[in-house]
Image 1: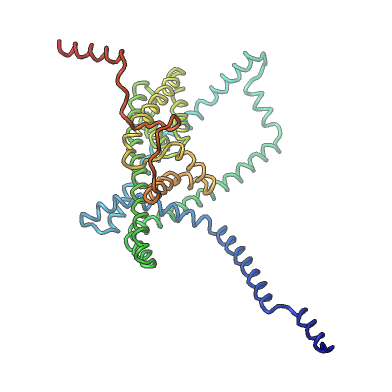
Image 2: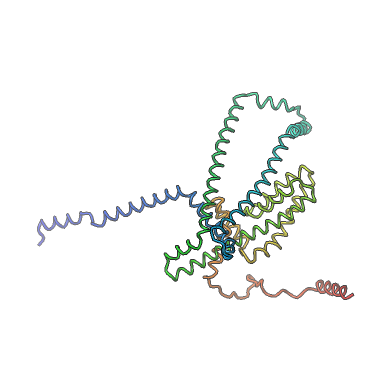
Length: 391
């Protein structure tokens, strides 16, 4: 028989809060707060994290050269310093050559600007039947002093912002260089520290992945440097034949920009030589573009496969997609490291993915099978060549 006291006790126990609910609510709120704190922290440290990522991949590129010097008895810090010094001198030389070219062109443009304006105004008058003069255009532009002052203020503000951007960029470059030096000089010690945190069966996998990353990143940069050197020599010879001024500077510009700017570097690199060639003649600019296009085909089908066959084997479509994905995630830094990352991931996964034989099918022809027997025209041409050799 249920008494009133027993019924009241059951009702009170039913309405009472479960003991685990406050802790669950606290844990959920703590997880949400931790997530937002982590998101805010990553947002504040995004630039530093990108700099560290760039420094890590640059260190991977320096490792092969530093290892060679270290195996010859040189201390690793000194070997890293020599590698950095050579790289710095090469970059400084390139910037000095291209900078002198740009300064000369700006000075020439400022000197010839009145003549260019007279020609432009004359062409406009002849084409559209107007009666414009340079003095009239200048009077219309500068008659409103308030507008001129507004433009001057905007230019001053932009100059201040540009100066701040330059200082920020220099500081960021210094940060990347400093971490790159530490990652390269302390590479073996850093790898031992990482592996000491892992069980023995995982250490071999980490070291294997690290080794692949060094090989692919270094191979990518060194193969690009070789292609840039060959491209610079070829374009230098072409610019000499076409009598294009500043042949050395333009050749270095084309070689480096076409190889180290992903995807669109070839098209960006040829714009400056074509514009400089216009000062010689329109036909010189046309021949510059024709030669650059022909050389690009020669590089794509002959040089590039041979040089990169033993360094970075990655399909062009995969490389293009990796560059787009890297740029979307990390901007310019992601575009620069996208191809080495994709090549490293492809090589690392290939050691763990098992592949099966594919049966013969019209949709999957085997491109590695022996070539077909030569046709009748090929056989006739070979017999003709053999007869000429025998004579």
